[in-house]
Image (tube, rainbow, N blue to C red; front, top):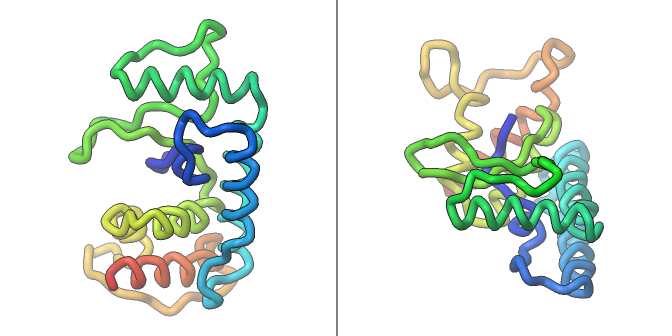
Length: 169
């Protein structure tokens, strides 16, 4: 699944951030915790995305490749770096929002990505991404009771519903 986030936004950094700024931003983001109503799985998912961003940006080779792709997107170029590495960042599909930088995440990381988007104030995007988890098959908004153990999303669903509800506020 693709989420319209990039590693610099996850850490709250500008492209030209120094190594010291990177370490400080990582430390600050890791110790900031979401509301206490979130499950440990949601907090862990958020932490994994922050750590992934830090790992990529703290490695000089990976950061250089990532920055080339980031700049190629920013200036409208479809080229990739000389090695052809695309990393985890690509241009999103052409949607009503236009082109977005995005990263690939697993289903388990969705709630963490929604938490980060909430911290960034991206409430409309949270509503768009979270809606399928609170809509029944007929398209009617309903929050159904969760039958534990039946589906994998059952663990994440309360966290997603909470994030969508907070985005509505």
